[in-house]
Each structure stands twice: as C-alpha cells, then as structure tokens.
Image (tube, rainbow, N blue to C red; front, side):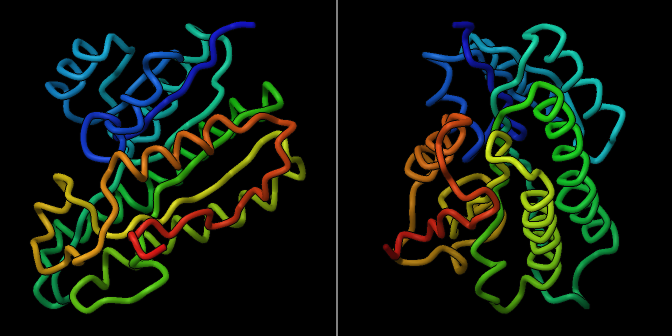
Length: 231
C-alpha cells in the first residue's frame, strides 16, 4: 500500500506544527505557511515537504494542492490550521486588522476547503479536519471579529459535510480552547484559562481524525472535540 499523505495548512507553528510532528515519522507530510523562513526551518527539521502559501490567495492555494497531488498522486488528509487573531473591541480594531482576519479566517478557510475537497472527491476518499475555536461555542468579551470569522468557518464545514453524501470523504472540525501557542502570545494571558489543553494534546485528536479510513463509520461534520481541557 502506498504511503499515506497529509497536508497541514498553517503547519509551521502552534497546533499545526504539533500535528506535522506527530505525522511525519510514518507518513508523507507537507506544511503550508505564508512565512518563507518558517517553511524552510520546519521542512529542514522534520524532513517533510513544504511550500509558501498565503491562504487568502486562491491561486496560491490552488497551485499548492495541485503540486502535491502531482507529486503524491493522492492526498489522504488535510488539517486546516491556519488562523488569524483579531482581538479587541470592534471600535478599537484597525481596519487593516479586520481585513486580514477576514482574508485568513473566511477567504482562507473557503479556499483551503474548496481545493482540499476537490482532490479528495476526485480520488473518492480522504479527511479534512478544520480547526475552529471554542469562541464559536462560547462568546467572550473582546473578540467579536475573531469569533465572527471563525463562526463562518464552522458553518461552512457543517454545510460541506452534509454535501458529501458519502462517509468516504469526511469533513470534521475541532474547537480548541486557548492554548499556549504563538497565537496565544498575541492574545495575551488574560485569555488563557486556568485549565487548558496543550497543542500536543489537541494535535493527537486531530491526527486521530485524519487517520480515519473510508470504512470508519464516523459522523462527518460533527464538532468532534471541544478541547478546552474541561473533559
């Protein structure tokens, strides 16, 4: 059987990097990021594939997935981990920050899911795991734009999961709570709960979902985990 192949979008830091680390010893892995230096560092460290890709640019996303499909022939799973933080009251947020959050969390999610599902449906199987946020399920003060943009992705995943009409192509979502990652550093300590999951712990659940086979009777579209540590 050919080696299984996985794409980790936003795979050079935080949860995405933790997912790539768990996969790379046994599977073919490619990390995508808009930071060229990080792609170079991670691919050298992990010995995996990688490419520079701004998820808000559809042409870049299309070419990144097309290149991997040509190289590997099949793509078994995609972890969509790229995310843009936008914290603060709406009236205090700079228009540039709002725009970028929409570009990454809304357009980026749309483009990644569009291209991922194109290839999975072409081959007839595969899994997509989109990373949301607990903010979608539990509003918190000071994050209206972040929550709104992540809520878009959650709604998109639910609709796309229904549209597959097959258990062979699974579209799933994981909603972590605040984690000690680089994004969390930008957020500030006031948003880090006293009880929280580590990126490695959440990554193990993401990988479990990525490795589900077409014969696994998993309910595609479910919010499979609220990984905020409060189990």
